[in-house]
Amino acid sequence: MIVRRADQAKAIVVVVHGAFEHSGRYEWFFDRLNHHGFHVIAGDLPGQGKTKGKRGHIKSFTEYIVTVLSWIDEAKKYDLPVFLFGHSMGGLIAVRTAQQHKEDLAGIVLSSPALGMKNGLARPVYYFSKLLNVASPSVRFKTGVRSYYATRNEAYNAHDVSDPLFLRKVSVRWYHEFEKAIAMAFKKMDQFPDVPTILLQGGEDHLVDVEAVKEWFNGIDVNEKSIKIYEDLYHEIINEPERDVVLEDIITFLDHRIKQEPV
Image (cartoon, rainbow, N blue to C red; front, side):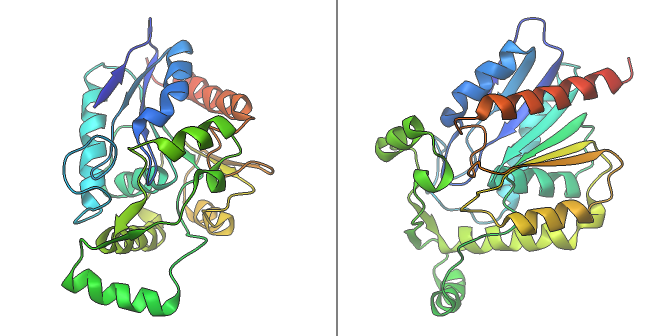
């Protein structure tokens, strides 16, 4: 777990990273949140980053949710408003956490949430993978995902090529748990809590199905919700060259919600 403290913090943001990556790729984001008066709590998800265990493998999606709940519990110790931020698969984890556990959150920020995959497995491979999921669930295969699919930020792309913590293989079980979680996010839309939610999505996302994201957003019953599509941005909107614009929208949402919090 990572705790980054701000001077005279007004709230805490729990940050959940996406698939294949790790919390170390969010240093810029952590620094900017601190600068604007927010403590940050984050960490590496099971099977990713510097965590123990088989890389790229989970037994159940619940492992992610349990991990995020532990981060939220840590955030509550500060007696400040707590926000949940999730990017990509981290956004999906945030959604499933909120659906299953009615945490006292000041708001939820979803960054290009993985609510629909753009490039799934070919049918023959998919059916074979279902058999492997029973017989040998920890067998891993190459993701085929490259950084330049996710962002136009050349510095990130260059660094990811040699980053030993960047996942290049995931297990069959991981894939099917991920797919199942997406299905449950839609099936349990009515269980998403009435928590102020903002969804920020790259319009030129090559990894996540933008139409599926819109469909899910339109289906949740939340009194205070908003969505913004950045037409020319790729998947990793907080790493894109225009990330300062995205950051400003996030900070505006957080500050507005803090003003609405009861004293």
